[in-house]
Length: 100
Image 1 (cartoon, rainbow, N blue to C red):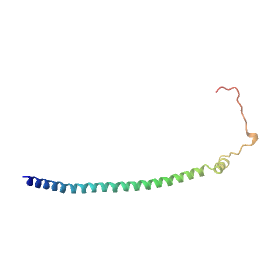
Image 2: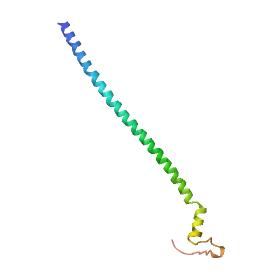
Image 3: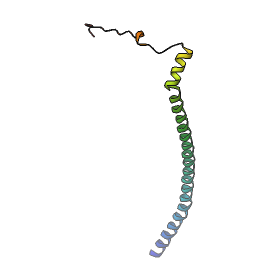
Image 4: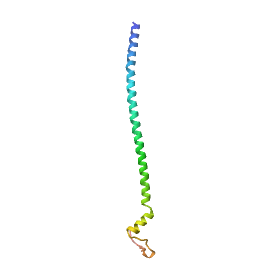
């Protein structure tokens, strides 16, 4: 009697193991695909980050170029007809006794 039970238990264990192997392989395949997809996404995001960093560097360079004092002074004098204020052009206004 015990021999039959052990044999049935061994057969059941063998069947369960035979079913688990394909399930483990399927799970491994799914995880491998997910890993591959995530690796591609990471690579794309890293490329995008590099492009954005380069674009940011260019914009910072453009800002420094556009805000240079020489450029601003040239535009003010040539395009807007402005000139530097002379000492006699400066008017100083003092306000005393004004409540704030």
